[in-house]
Image (cartoon, rainbow, N blue to C red):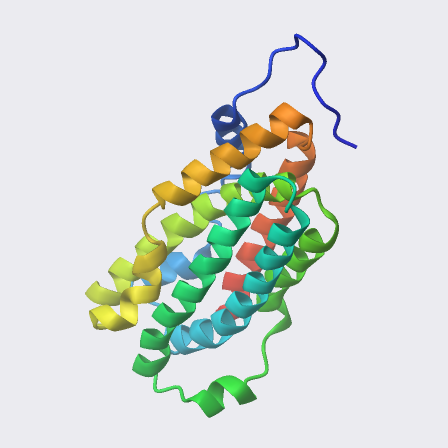
Length: 226
């Protein structure tokens, strides 16, 4: 169990904890082979339809997980606010995804009837497990590390969709939404982690362990889409 720091003990800065986690969990440059193929224009166009269908499942599941984490952190407003912000972001992302589903010719019936791939749904399943039992502040650290790679990959895909696949701006909107770091989320993450450090509600080593699995499941998602 995390414990409050001893009186007079130096308290680590949240920014340093988050930066350390991002560095420790950064995937190798060639880890995401599908993104590399998309960047080169070598992936089949069909992967975008599969991506859209799978992401519809991921987003709706993650939004529930973030809302549950916000409720669990109700006594710690900076942590709860972080997860509320993420849940709101998932709602916006779902709207952006509509542009891609439309460009891929997918209908509401296609989305409802789709049978998701287990490898694509491992990430939200593990996120739900963390939502149920992990210290919420540890999840903040784990997610922040994962978001760094996700942001980078979305930027690559968004550019390739324009340059190699001829997708219109509306179809690229989902990836563009995530293609640049969100200052508000980064600021809220630092506030949440600092609050948790000051009150002894986080253990960065445990958070990195969570993050390592999240990153592995993230890569599994892309491999399964391919």
